[in-house]
Length: 281
Image (cartoon, rainbow, N blue to C red; front, side, top):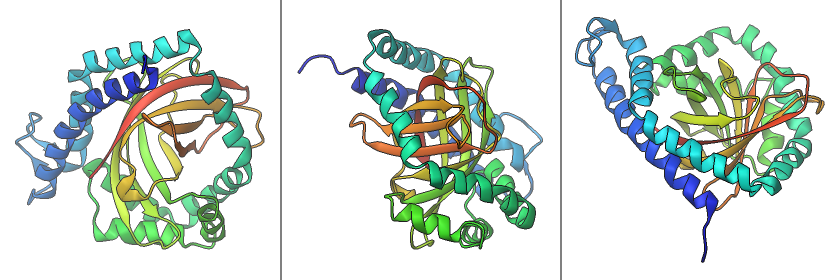
């Protein structure tokens, strides 16, 4: 069969992601059963439950630095061999194909942030705990069915988008080019199923380490089926919808996975490539 570089990336990022997933999920279980806002059993005595997941996320990535380095080498080998060229081109085409949807989501979000600020805060606070509570489900439903996003998400569902996500993240763990995020995804078009997820990834190129504090997702997988390894290409700049948009492809089959859209945008066109792993909680 020969060497499959994308299968090698899938194996490497999954190995790194598995270590983070098991550690973070253990912390989430501890936090969810805590009777007070202080968690004493996580190695950070006296920390609040709201910071426990974030701290553990960072620690888990640090402890998995070797696995992330291995994954980075696999991604670099693909870039060096130009095996990613077709996917780079496809990533740009996907942004162009979905440009009106991406633009509509970006245009709507400031109104959501302003008029549904309390719902956004519920999500941000819950992301720190890694918890999917009734309040989180209600907030995601209210945001997705709001007048600002309802029609856009209905259109997205007609174009094979199966979930809409709101995630919070950024650089983690002082590990070069590694980003982490925690978010919530709601299924389309029915707006019923809500799942929480964590994601870790690393990137090469100009956009490495440039992840947004808040990003929106349009994904082709339902919330419960969106876990696993992926490869992503960061499309930046001058495409009407701005830049910094991550276009993901599932590994190892390279099926189109969707978009992660930062709320801010760049000005020049650049491409960087990265790999990552998403887990559901």
